[in-house]
Length: 55
Image (cartoon, rainbow, N blue to C red; front, side, top):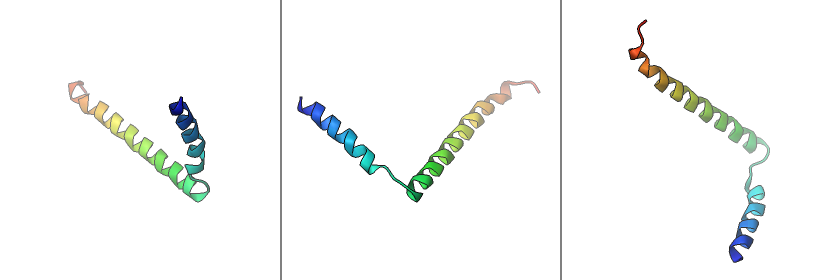
């Protein structure tokens, strides 16, 4: 029962820890850049198997 209270308390504090304003915008741009780089890496790895293709 005490664990449930702690979990609820942590979720309420989570909103207080979120960045706002310029910091939130910067974090959003950084996340997007990371996602783009991860997608580029995934595609590059997929294309590395292109040796099997007859071109």
